[in-house]
Figure 1 (tube, rainbow, N blue to C red):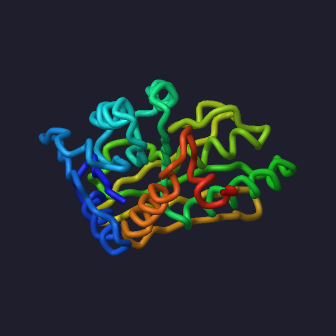
Figure 2 (figure 1 turned 90 degrees about the horizontal axis):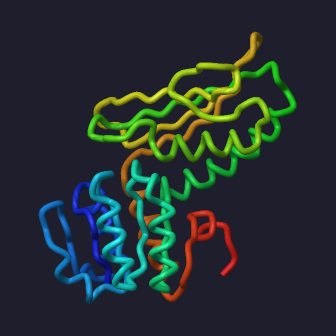
Length: 235
């Protein structure tokens, strides 16, 4: 598989290393100041850049009919446009707020717990995410996915918010600390106890491996998919 890396920061370099170990070839390493020269050789593009550059990277590849696995967060106001481009150009597209297998298992656990806790209104839910200080968007895309998983199931909550403005707001606390790849916690507090589930990433390799696995899975497919399709769907 020939891969174009759209974004060549820390994540891009870890993806490059894992892709090479799995027998794949990198044909483009595009930093923020680089051109798309070499993209035409790629079987697929993996996009991990910054929010301001993601839409341009994704749309350029999709317009060339090249499938895209996108992991940058903070640009989802343009998600529907990328879906339309994917469909118009008869290619494939996966966006994931988190590519780690562990986090995607955590997403499913979160939804199951929300279903259970919806029967017990004495428990109030809160989310917390901690990331490295270089992460530009807050809350994280993973935290938003977790929050949406709760809002879509739990009748108490109508939306997520960084501040709890009303009883129907699900609060997300976002913290930035040095050298933290990503920690996400979900709390259900009552007057007598607290239930907590947590996912802690130890490094970037889990995210990078998931991105390469998603690219391998997407080859030959057309349409828009999620990481739930990659890890838990049927071929």
